[in-house]
Length: 135
Image 1 (tube, rainbow, N blue to C red):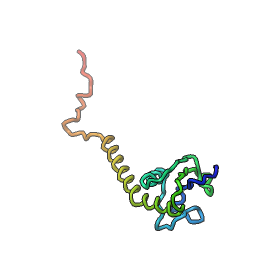
Image 2: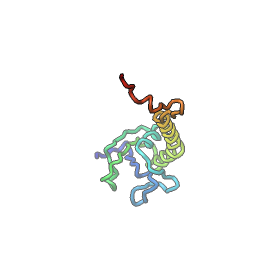
Image 3: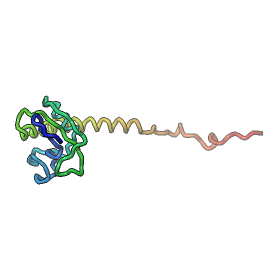
Image 4: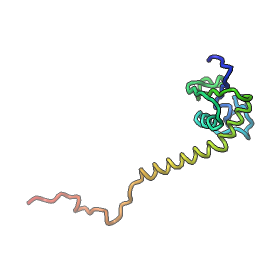
């Protein structure tokens, strides 16, 4: 990748609570997020009013075999302050909103795929299934 002096490269690994600092996490565990996605980071950057660009094929250099993508964020403050603001936004606003939306979609699918219950009056008897004999 080419050097870019106007943007920060921000990877999902910076926010991941399950990683150690030596594996790429940049924040303390208290400020980190569980399993962050590129979508959550994008929504947080959007909500903070940051200029960003997404590269879905990129991978964190320490984990080059696992391409999770990256986001380029315009330099306004220090990189650590930007990462902290994004993490806070994900934890307080983005994650709960996405969870609520997922629940709604799951319930809608459940209602859509559920079969109507058959009552005793709706059941057919054996004689109704047999074809009538011709004489």
